[in-house]
Image 1 (cartoon, rainbow, N blue to C red):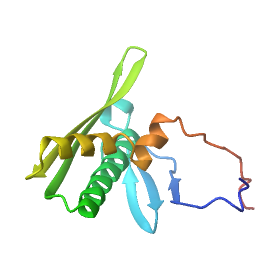
Image 2 (image 1 turned 180 degrees about the horizontal axis):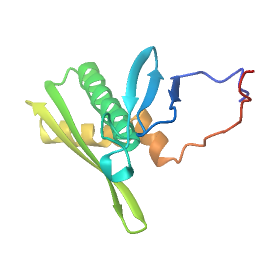
Image 3 (image 1 turned 180 degrees about the vertical axis):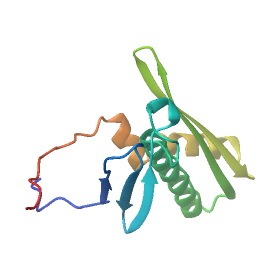
Image 4 (image 1 turned 135 degrees about the horizontal axis):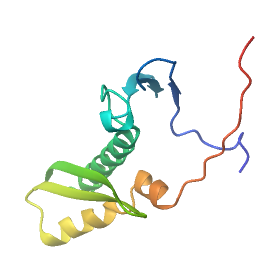
Length: 141
């Protein structure tokens, strides 16, 4: 698929200037937000860390996808809560995801929603090792 044929799903930019911390301005899908390293990484912890933002996207995608699926099925899902942690154990890196599904769901519905969580768009992108195409753009002036 060529770049002209590709469908853009999301856009984001990040901008950091010199200074005493790593506070970074982010513009994503017409919204402004920030990121910063935690104190352990040399930042001030003034905003979510880059991995915190990755986990936020995964959690949001998981919650939204499960709600959409339950609504289409007419299932009594009243709330989805997703807890996430990015963990490093030596060379082993992984994400723990814990789902809390509120509502009068039976065991089969809960199991199906857990299965669906394994196939949300962001889950598949992370698990698939999404390629990143990096290029360099010359600064203006």
